[in-house]
Length: 415
Ligand SMILES: [Zn+2]
Picture 1 (tube, rainbow, N blue to C red):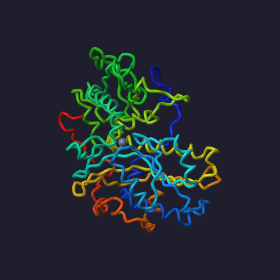
Picture 2: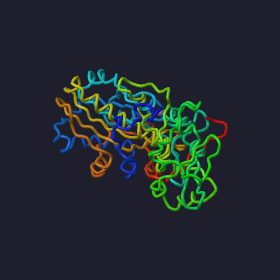
Picture 3: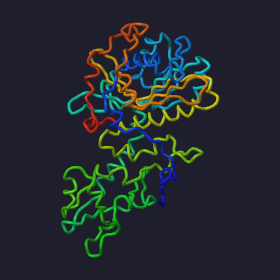
Picture 4: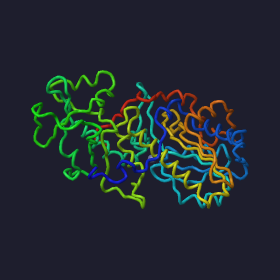
């Protein structure tokens, strides 16, 4: 695979991340309710069975999340439930700040972490839309998470351009051929920052038989792999069995291409910074989730793995960690003139003091356990700390299911 960065070549290390169906198989929690259930879980028999000793007086509530003001309710909710100010272990974009860990364990021997990525959600028909939220000071909405959306934008643009440029047709009404512009075959021929390279083995079954069709200038023709057509949903394959070339569009699946920024910074292991650049092919081509949701979810999964690796280091063995990671879903309430958050859990790490490992649970296991728990009440009334009672209909306003969503509307003339 000439021209590919080493982190995209076959065999490069790639952590397993929970799939969208597993994560959104159940509706998210109202954040305050999730925190109440998390505290109930920590006091329960299963947590004690792992060797985790919950001592309220020794707990330091911590967050790792983006700096966005739409997430300030997370701090207030932790204050309401624990009676204490939370310690910040997060950076812009929802990255885990490894450098904050040493100080955090000096401040409290049991760290209660609530962290993850975030995404704006606007309720509405058709599952609502992700990636933007109301910004009252501006009088309009804007991207959320803005940092990840900006990082993602050139990748989405390159993918959608390729979807328009790569065309399929059938010269004889039977065999389907794909017409590929040179820039998707040879990265050095493209002048753009972000490069997209088609994986010829995954999409094609070799050059077209002689005499079947001639390529246009600057393009090459290949036979399409039959299993590519077989995998298309419904009658989509039928669209391409026509003499008129049609763009491949969103049917260009993650397995058929690589996408990368050749200027990306690499760490000592040759992995990109940020690590989520390794997953951009899946994020931009996901048909079940819009890119703004997929990018925050992938980043939260990767940053949780970084957190797990960090707390397992020998320096932190004497300390206990209860780390709840997931996705904060930000809604703006016009009635309250405030942000309210849902939380979709991804992972839980429960590491008792004196051990390097502990209990790890995935999204389905967290839901199964938490749904039957009676939430612990807050120590201070939520309405007093937040300034309002969390809206009673918050959970019902979230109607997304995998594949059921609308693309956000971009206001004309605004980024
Ligand atoms: Zn953000």
